[in-house]
Image (cartoon, rainbow, N blue to C red; front, top):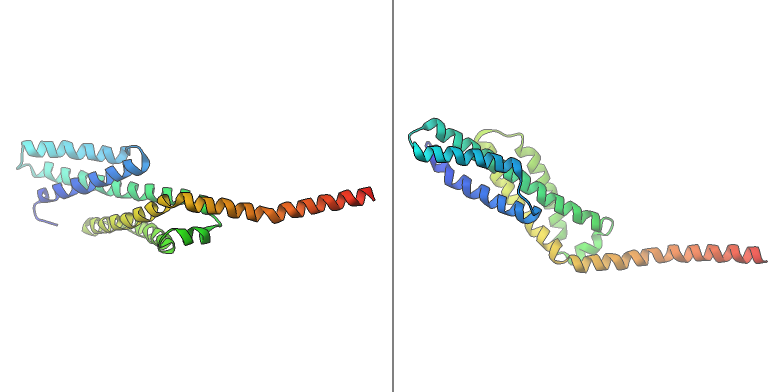
Length: 190
């Protein structure tokens, strides 16, 4: 961390804004807690611009910007993981089909687990280590975005293959039910 916290402000604003845009793109809406921190931060930045020598205002601005950045990282990862979980419900029991269609599917599943563990870990850290861990969490989010994109762009193919497989899975059950019904009917008629 630099000795002058003012130097952190542009990077924190840029990283948070990037995350907010991705959250809106994935989720279709803004996220209020992050925006609340963002609002506090911009109020302090505006005050800081009016009185650049005010160290307390500078520290408040940086503190709220960090909180907004951390919140945006948490929410971004939560949004991505929720979308991946939604897909998981679609292909539950049929991962072998999806893995034949989605490039690097198994690594995407491993990346999902790694991101979940990193997310738990980052919430237990403090200080400069916390910011570094959140920056690393952003890397996890970027990998998961690529995996989510692969799931999304190939969805029509794997969903159709799963639909066909489910039909094939039902066929023996249907045949068994018909066989039992015919057997009972024959036994009753004889």
